[in-house]
Amino acid sequence: MKLSIIVPCYNSADTLGETLESLWEQAWPGEWEVIVADNGSTDSTKQVLETYVNRMSGLRMIDASGRRGPSYARNCGVKAALGEVVLFCDADDVPADGWAAAMAEALLTNDFVACRLDTELLNPAPVRASRGNTQAWGLQRFAFLPFGHAGAGTLGIKRFLHEAVGGFDESLPICEDVDYCMKVQQRGVGLQFVSSAVIHYRLRTTPQHVYRQASQYAKYEVYLYTKYAQAGSMSEMWRWRKYFQAWWLLLGRAPELLRSSTGKTLLLWRLGRLMGSLKGSIRFGGPPVMVE
Image (cartoon, rainbow, N blue to C red; front, side):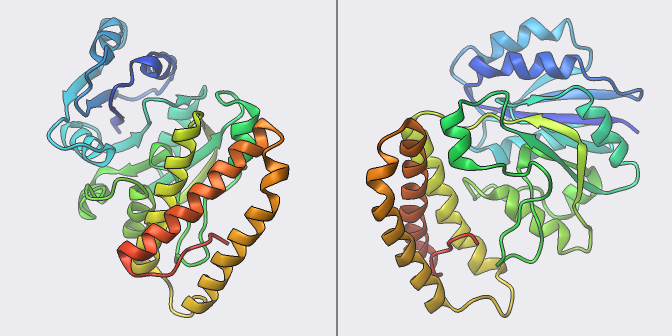
């Protein structure tokens, strides 16, 4: 079984070296390759890659600049891949020792898998506190969606299945991984959590990035609700009531949260989610989605 690891990147010079260093140290007894799908970088990403080309057999960069977005880059990477199975790894994350072997082994008996996320190694405490232990011990779940999901950079899949669902939706700027997980599982293929495989995950740290990511996530969660919400989900009126309650609670806690760096980061994250959920409701016509 040949293994292909797809690394989408865009202006990733500051972090790509650490990612490639970790991939270089991975071990898998079969054939494997690493494909860096460059989404049109204008920094020194290519120069960073060149320092590893002679050290890592099977490492190559492909041009994935035809359309902006990680989904397009990932899809281009799979099209260029030679492997029967594909692992995805983001260019700002760091696979732990044994990650590739554990994921590849799981794909011997499963068609679709996801690894565990660790946020301790690469992130300051205030940022970690604002996000919680996402995907640390199991799949992520939204009550309104029919299946669990996982981050794109933690997934592994049989290539035929990726092609069968048409890859990642390139029209989605975010939450494309949740959509991908729903599409695959709607075909009757379960997503298996591989606790022995770990990715060290890098969170956004600047205030503007924290707010923007929170806002984008919440906005497109409304889109996911309109596309996949299960029959019997809570009423739209209930969701609007929960939304306004969330605003009331956040405003009440704001003075307390502003007293510490951890609190400020949490305030930005929750404010971004509330604003994004409202924008999503206006754009997609669904109710605000306050993730239960």
